[in-house]
Amino acid sequence: MVELKTDTSIDAMYEAGQVVGQALTAVRQAADVGVSLLELDEVAHGVLRAAGASSPFLGYRPSFAPVPFPAVVCISVNDAVVHGIPTSYRLRDGDLVSADFGAELGGWAGDSAISFIVGEPRPADVRLIETAEHALAAGIEAAVVGNRIGDIAHAIGSVCRAAGYGIMDDFGGHGIGRRMHEDPPVPNEGRPGRGLALRRGMVLAIEPMLLAGGRDDYHAAADGWTLRTNDGSRAAHVEHTVAITETGPRILTAR
Ligand code: MG
Ligand code: MG
Image 1 (tube, protein in one colour):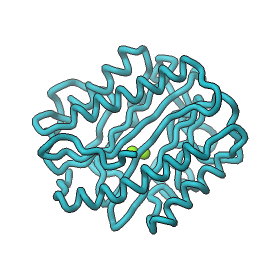
Image 2 (image 1 turned 30 degrees about the horizontal axis):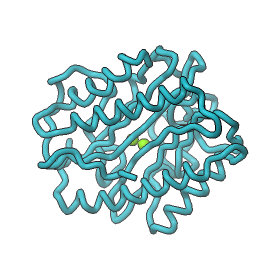
Image 3 (image 1 turned 90 degrees about the vertical axis):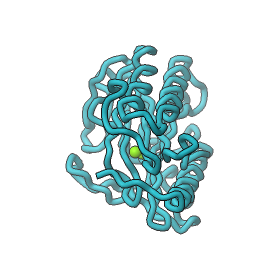
């Protein structure tokens, strides 16, 4: 069931979204050659504590997961697409990092992700990340009353495919509210004019995941969480929590 949010609830979700934006900004600023992924998790944890917010990621255990998620941020490096567990791995020059972070504040959740490069960027990685950001912008632009879920999915998928990148068919965006994952699913590829009609008060996490190799194949790593490309190519993941309002899409996790 899709729950519509009031304007007051959306304002409250914006407050949660601001904590998410602050944490991702802090993670990005802290990420440097030689810094470990566990250190980045501690940075994100510090933002949560300072805001009096809690983590919907820590201890999260969906049906596919062998163990509860042990951190407050997912850090996926290079061929890891999403759900990376922070480890003692220390970032190297040229690493492509995707950080996905959620916060709960005042009973409302926010969810957002960024991809960036540590040190000297490779042109192919810059293009991948820029395309992911364009896909996200296209998806957000389609999140308007009068459209359908398929219009968002089609907008995202078109940008990814036109650039020759692969997509994860089993993972995508979602409704969000009091819980991090609510109905409806928001796929990263679809047919325009199809699916649920978008209505004022819907809040969606829109999150393109792009696989540079152009194939749609991926697998779970030995930790049971991290999803990696099968061909070893790099991946990018960007996300915003977006409310559908009378005056258009409102990005609640804007940084
Ligand atoms: Mg997320
Ligand atoms: Mg999400």
